Length: 511
Image (tube, rainbow, N blue to C red):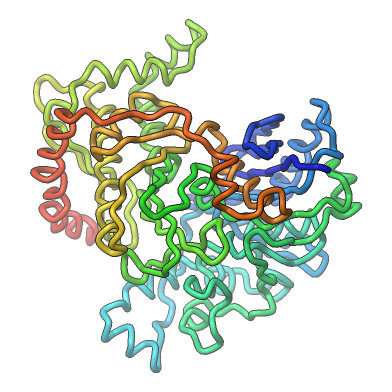
């Protein structure tokens, strides 16, 4: 009986096809790099949807070249980057390039909500938040600036829904993939009720949206056409997984609310899984978890570990050149750079708000570094970046604990930054908690495979899948003395920075 699971993970930089066994071991892996997006004007980020589909097919075809036995596959699952949107016609043909999740277009000047909802949000002091949603919603931009495209659209899909159509020939999508500015009720995990305010803020005809399928349920079967393009066996069931962050949380083993998953990726996040719906930040909903009916409490630091890339590009050419000459990974030398500086970076403290948030931090937020002295070097700046991100995520953990009433006692760290041992130790020291890495780097792919395993019956439930398929690779214990030093800086400096600098940020925003 086939037991292996194939996970397709369409990330920002690449598409990966990974075969896992029922114990969570990677048997085969294929990675196809993709150009994330192209830009025709400042702030725009778009991509030809065919780029994503071709990469999926190429990644799968590479597996068969490696000798994967197709008959060993019990099911396939799909996880993708969030909030990339595609308009298609009746036969699933894209009508325009995909609007990438990194796109920054906004639709200003839209009419505020009126009537009952307008009054309700005004009384609640939330009118600015609703206006932000209206401006950010890609559907509003399309209706205003490309009405002919909008009128011709048969379906309005996330990348997950588009790829699902290409694989099974149905306009369906996983509940777990619904993250973005759409009329989705995050509490019910279904489309908004007809009387809900989101249909007014983002006016989309419900017929444009796909049918939603619960996580770990069957989306369909691989069609003959998809089989011909990808080499996937026709008739293989496609099981609903979740968006990449939620899948990563599951793959890291964070099913209980006291275990937090830190994702050190382009956007740094802290996530915990809960059965109860709670808005950690008012009006910012918890997203669907990779477990049916559960919620992923998420706090984001926009441009999180992108800041590490920024530093390497701006200040790290020496290490990159040395690494290339020595035939080693640059991260090894950057870890060495971190270790040359004491915890606390000799008083240099960084606030990592290189890109603002909606509520946390506020839309006026800017990044800041304070505490420069005559001993400050670029190594201090690099360590301060890692410490600032850890401080911000710790603040997110405290918000989550306060709202949920569940203390966080363990950390799992995933994403590209998790490969840095220096970053893991620093994280443990800032939080004062043990920080562990999952046994595989491909945590989002593993989470998708776990959804497939439960959905197809390889494992009877998610606790069993967690126990059998995800394991801790190594754990970094906090140094008590170092944690005490970080506590001094966190409470005495870091947590004071935003409220002291906020008036200046607001003044900058006006200019």
